[in-house]
Image 1 (tube, rainbow over the protein chains, first blue to last red):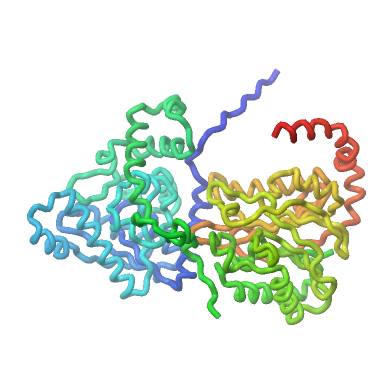
Image 2: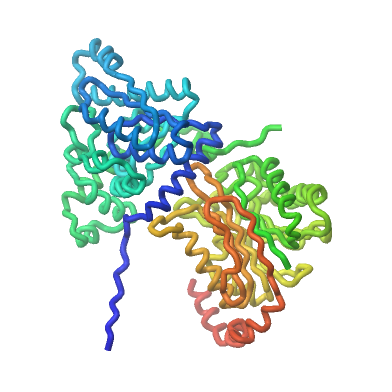
Length: 284
Length: 287
């Protein structure tokens, strides 16, 4: 007799990328529209997240309504700028290059104790200053490019690269951004290179984090959904990897929130007084 | 009995503008001459209001007055209209997620349903801001007998069972469903709605009319995919996801008796239900 075998259920990270691309395109168009914007500004690092964000913005608004910015520092890897140019060309967007070396070195010159790690954060915050200034100059909304994995790990500069008000990739794990990037035609050189924040010469994300993104994302998905460690281990993940993922998530919750305010009333903002960010009452 | 589902995208908190948009949609529909128009959950304000419910909720009289004005300006002859809205009860001061059935240009308000199942999990937080409704009832319209269920009400098949036992031939379901689950070409919640609507319609031999909100609300994409399912559980029409659309479908209540004769699930339920009373009572006592 014929035996028919079912497949076991489980959590799936793979997405229908054409559907996701369509959804995020609509998201960008609508989120800009109600804020009164028709143009967007994307800081393009040469990496896959910003290239994917640029592709979505070009689809949503038309390439002529998207400003791409490359913001290199003298210590940045030369290939970062090359890949930023490659991404801008691929999606038909003009690229403006602004060297942040004078801004960063101006500060560094008055703080000789600046460590490479701190200087990396200064670079990220210098980029944020340029992005927001040109947002006003061009009447273009800055788009965030951070993915869910780095947001969960706190692997970003607080009030730096997390500052833009609209972020299409923030609920996609790095693994999913790679899938979406391929769907949108992000150039192979960007897609295949090891991810790097390029804030300190020679760094890579996976070495900084001590984890592989593809493995970390599966652990994250199960951890966020409440599966116990033993279940995740049974899927083939090591105890120390799971521990590292949980450590990174749990020491960075504060980075995903607004600053802590001492609550003294029953109208404390975001504690008692709760309104969604798109809330507007018609005034008569 | 021509129905038009108005799959519209409200602007958050802009009640007057949203009602003007509804009026424009009705003008667009004049040539199609629908007799019943169905508008999604929380349409006048948008769905996610948090504490803003108490600033923006309408009394049923305020809504009736606004709709009468729209009807006078935009429509000739009577028009039945089902609409979801945040309701303020003037007597008690309580707030509800409600939907009302109006016979505009006729008897006015025929029925109001207050949502019983208030989703308060995940992205949802309704019970923090709203009171629960306390029942499901069918009611008579000029065409037949109907019931209203709002969004999660419909995800519990017991509510549509009660509506069908109470004689409903058409179940109207205003909803607001944020897209989630993108492992297939259509979001998982949209697939779930379609399956539910088709199986409920087929189980009871009723029409199901789903009016689902669209538009983005601070990153949450209301998915649309409004639909009408026939008493056999077939899709008679379906609106696209994520965009505004006017879905026109003719419902023929005369088809219900023959369809139910072929597949007498509701009649079987009526005769079989007394056998289950003891278990229902036992389970109720154990809950």
